[in-house]
Length: 368
Image (cartoon, rainbow, N blue to C red; front, side):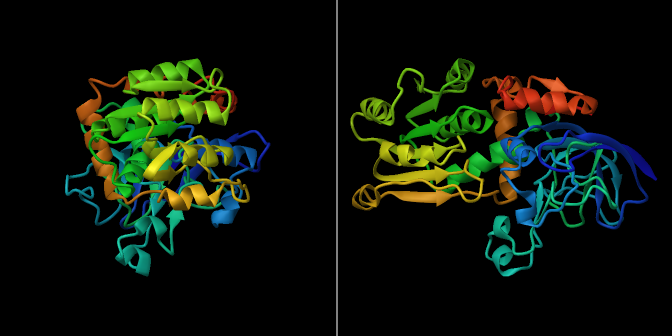
């Protein structure tokens, strides 16, 4: 019997309720994770507001939000002895894992598109009022289903640095891989929250000659520079789309960017970002997850300039292993600890969400 707390999410607009629940056993192939840290991601905030409907993805309420997490093995189900790289697992092993769970046998999984699994299950979509209860990261435990991908966290990578690997970092790594960002290319990053900062760092690591970050929060622009941005654009001083597009042109010798990555999460950013692309530019759309939102743009600009747009949802699970390698290799040169510097106990989750909503923290974390 395992007893622990969950932060039950009943409906948008309602406060989280801390509830103590029991898990009778860990089944074959399952892994019970003792959660050590879960970040407040933008999608958690959207779900909290009701603008990202978990029900639309097959989820139900009440549930437990939280997915960008790190933890330690509490109990291994029968048959589980190693992580997905073959490293041995035991009680206390620190691990991260994709927060979505493909079936590995549908047509999309077999085609190497497991992030588009036809039978996809996901954290935050299970019920909090029925076993196993521990279905999201804002809890003492998370039950990892049988067959899930899981990776051991390197000893040198602390929990506060590892916690962002299974969502923000892996997502932007996958996005830049999808558009095959090349050595010497220029990259514009729309938004300097956690995803944007990771994008800056990964783009530089992939050999971008110039990375330009756009945001309106001074602290985030300062962080973007610390993460490797060669230039930043403050939307408070470059107040119009025309101003910002011209600045990008000026910074790219009149050519425009080779790659633009949208991690703002507002549809209006898309047309603006497309205007910043040069000939054969590639646009990576990650941030807009709210169904039903639209934008207008001139398709002739898109056609005549041979531009490409790629939508990125989730990532291929092996990317997470590479994300851990990235963190291990770059933790001495990047201020990664500043991403989730603010931490709150589980009992203070409502305060943490209020702080995250007002952008007082780049990435607030719940530490049970």
